[in-house]
Image (cartoon, rainbow, N blue to C red; front, side, top):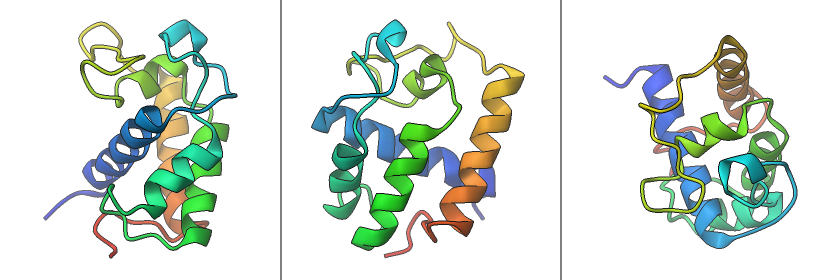
Length: 123
């Protein structure tokens, strides 16, 4: 059985990876080489396209996208999820989550479920 933390990791990885591939603007990930976090629209489009396996409705996708863009996770922490070889990738061996990242990650996970109703494999 998949734990809530591992499910959240998969959800975040899918969202950020797909959004990174879709492009976007705004946010503040320039220090991680992303040129800014992906826009909420780009993330929502990636989720709605179903490529991420989230099975989210357009409303859920918009909600999840806004939460990721507005999250307090550091750009480096988000960079751990973009996938090796993609712009902004941060090797997990080179950056360990700070306490602030962990708190933001946990909050994002709760919000994805409680505010957006998004869960891995929901579709």
